[in-house]
Image 1 (tube, rainbow, N blue to C red):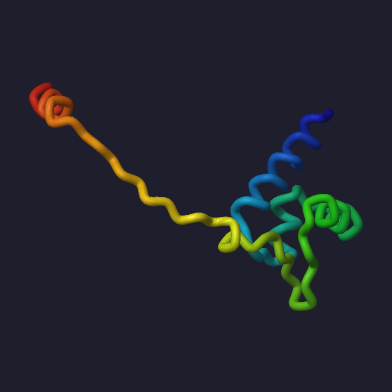
Image 2: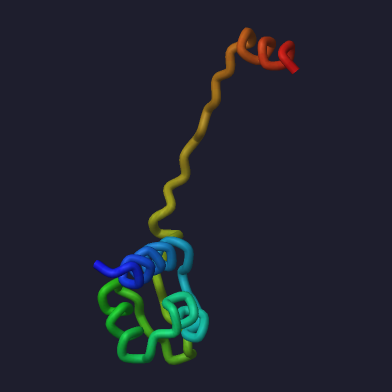
Length: 86
C-alpha cells in the first residue's frame, strides 16, 4: 500500500470519528483534493451520505456515546508523597 493510500485511509478514519456532518469542500481538502468520483468512492466505502445542502453526513456520534460514571480513588499516602516531593 502506498504512503498516500495509507494517509487517506487514516484521514477517513479520523473524519469518521471526528465529524457528524462536514462541508464537501472541507472534506475534499482533508482527503488531499480528490475529485468528485474519488470522493464518491470514499463516501460509499465509509458509509458517508452526500446531502443536498453541500454537506456530507458522516455519522451520528450521539447514538454511539455512552455515559460512564468515572470514579477515582486516591490514597492519601500517594497524594502526600506527591506534595512532599515538590
